[in-house]
Length: 335
Image (cartoon, rainbow, N blue to C red):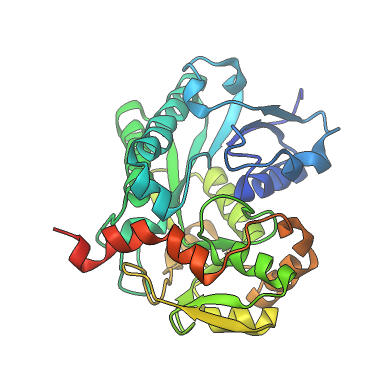
C-alpha cells in the first residue's frame, strides 16, 4: 500500500460503505475497511478480494483503542458504521446509543490520535423529524425515536471533537439512499428491499397509505461521491443535507418496478414527503446528482438476484413487526 493516500471506511462492507470503497480505490486510495458484519456483507467487497490496496478488519468499532495501528497514516476517516432502523431502536435503545454514539466516539479518538486530515460523519435526516420541506440544515432538530437520537448525538460528538480537539470534521445528513447492495435481511424497513423481494416472489407490493408519499431518493454512487467531496474540501465544521432535491412518490417506484399492489395502514410519525434542500452541498462542494431515479431503479432491477434471500414481507408480518412503532409513535401512545 505504499505511496497511496490512505482512507479508513467504517462500515465498509455495508450498503453505502462498499460503494465508498469502490470509489476510493478507483481514485487511487489504499482503503482500510472496518466492519463487524452486523449489517454488512463480505460479498459486497468480493470483487476487490485480490486488490493489495484493500485491507479489511472484521471488528466492532467499539473495540478500537485510540492508538490502533489501523489508523496510522490515514488521510481520511469516513464513518458509516452503526445500526439502523426505527422499530429495533425503540425496542433496544441502549444498543443503539452504544453503537451509534460510543462507537462514533471510538472512531473520533482513533482519527484524532492518527492526525487525519478529515473525518466525515454519515448523519441521518431523521434528526429533523416531521420537517418543513424542502429541509435546510438549520431546520429545528426533533429526534422522535432512539435511532434518530443516536445518530444526531453521534454527529454532536463529531463536532465536539472538532471544537475541542480541532479534528477536521464534516457531516452529511443522508435523506433516502438507494441502490445495489442495500440491506437484504433484518427488520422491516427500507422500501426498496421490501419491494424487490416481493417482485422476485411475484407477490403484491405492500404500499403504506395510498402511495402518494414521496421520498428524496438518491442513488448510492452519488452518495459516495458526496462523501469524497466532503473529505477533499478545505471546508471543515460543516453540515450538508444530501438528497436528489427531487422527491419521488412510492407510486412512481411501483410504476417503474411493475406489478400488483396491496395497501397497508399509514404509520404514525412518518412524513408525507422528505425533501432535502441541497443548495449548500451543491454550492460549497460542487456536488451534483449524476444518476436519475429511472436509471437507478433500472440498475437495481438488473441486479435483483441480490435480494432473492431477503425476508418476504406481507401485510400480516408487517403488522406484527411494526406493533412497537404504533405503540410508541402514535399520539395516543405518548404521554
